[in-house]
Length: 449
Image: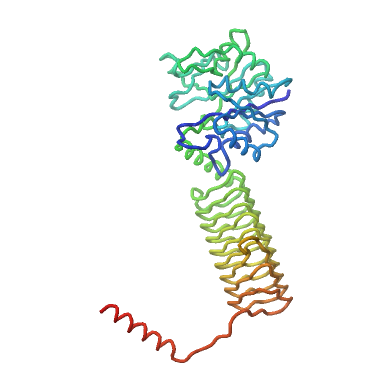
């Protein structure tokens, strides 16, 4: 049976106090919408429809980078969740299968939970609703059920005191045959406290039509919605706690896990060691046996096995480090390929560069890659030795086994095995420093008087 996802992403999210659409706010460097779609993707949906509204242009632009196969439908009027789901109908014309309704601001539904809902559908339930037992039910809609047999859903605004005492709450996630779902939505009215078309009404309508409805439950943490900045911070904390725990289970050593921040797509190999206060931006892979030392920041890079990074290193997008590379303290690397065993140990910037195997880049080295308009590449050969405080003015090539003298400004290619000296000849002026300092001190005294 094919599956279609209907992801609701039209809400304004006024409590976020933001000009940006709520579903574009980020957790672990990915929009909330991306997290929701990732969970649904585990079902291998035949079609994915995202219903947009507030900030639709920006949401649709972002969606192009998240899921190019997703179709967007706009909800021009914010008239409730049933009305939002109804906007997906044209995109599901001729579709025969199950539709699952997800929410773009609910990022942590697990694939196992969605699989349980699909299994309930396969077992004969016409409508399946995802519920959870809330520690503090608050204003959640309540599920009125007998075991897993669902009778109806009552919104908090419309609930009696007895119904508000129920702790089984509605997540909003629904699974049903697509044809059945839209047929039930056609019957939904707006005679309620909010004057909206509630998707929750389909359960009572299904029961009235002698269709079966069932509740599948999950832990409350999975249903966390993000409606405020405080919710966003809580969602980030929840993601980080899970990601750190998973990394530790997979064989990563973290000496202070609570100080390490991972992105949604961080990949850490077995026996990787991560010291305190390390931040991983998106697009980072670290291979087996590497060590990321304290206060380093990595983004968009690949770190080979047995590398040592930091402390206080920054790896920027496009950095590719082969096995055994050392990137030391206060070194920044950007868009550079560094071959096996090379060393970039101290206080250097290596950008738009190719560094050969076993090359040694001395402290204070800078690849001068930008001329104000274009970026240029520096190539450093295998076994080359770059003296401290060398400025390599790209495009330039330092050959295999070549050297540069400390303090050199290198503007021409250096042949294999050659030594390049690009600095002015030193001149010593006897007694000049003593005379100059005396003159300056005299001037300072006069000003003080």
